[in-house]
Length: 106
Image (cartoon, rainbow, N blue to C red; front, side):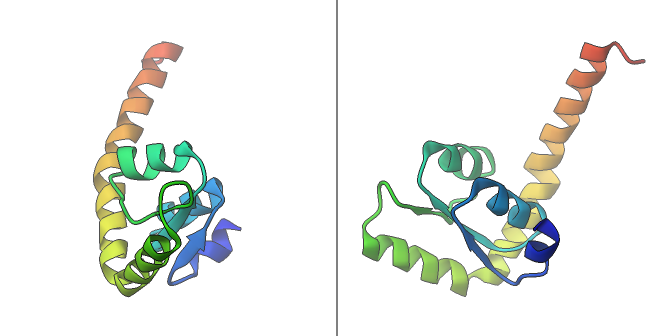
């Protein structure tokens, strides 16, 4: 599925792993949140605020956000690239250091 998603110009999804696949492939994504997990990952951790929230947004707010994200695809692609090169890269390094320490690898 990730191979297919990575070839898209834009992705809208309500499944967490499909949205992660799009994001990690650099595909502009509009996650449709139905649980707090989406906010925790995309908004709080990745600082990626383009997301529809089925719990807190009205239908009009959701559709306006979807339209705005679609119209901002180029900027979203740049934002994702920035987050991958900063936040994700830093967290990957931290995880690697922790694993090396945990596994006592020299």
